[in-house]
Length: 140
Image (cartoon, rainbow, N blue to C red):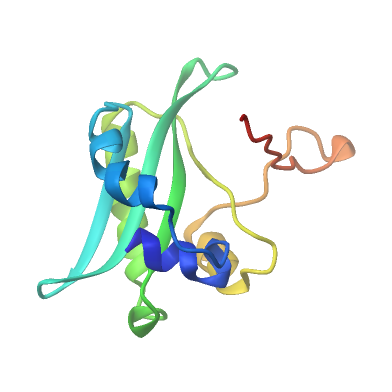
């Protein structure tokens, strides 16, 4: 599932590397702050959400970040993503989280519609300061 998502334009358009393919399940399982939600159609996985628990310093409570959310093309538009987010919310509440966060590419309009319909909104503390932006810096 994750390799198909990574290969999709919304996931970067490149398949996972060999190391990630060989190690990802083991590495995620070794991290108690990580959890995944899968959606199935019969025996076939059709959706995946990978989440990582973080911490909100302002709220002084855990938060859950949706790190990956993917639905296979054949099942998009069938509310699979929304159903998985319902379960993510339930797990986040069990963990005492104050919020669920995620990042999305601005060109991924269908995902943005899902997130907005489900209650997500762009993050800002003060409208005068604008919306938060997501940055990254790769470490060698």
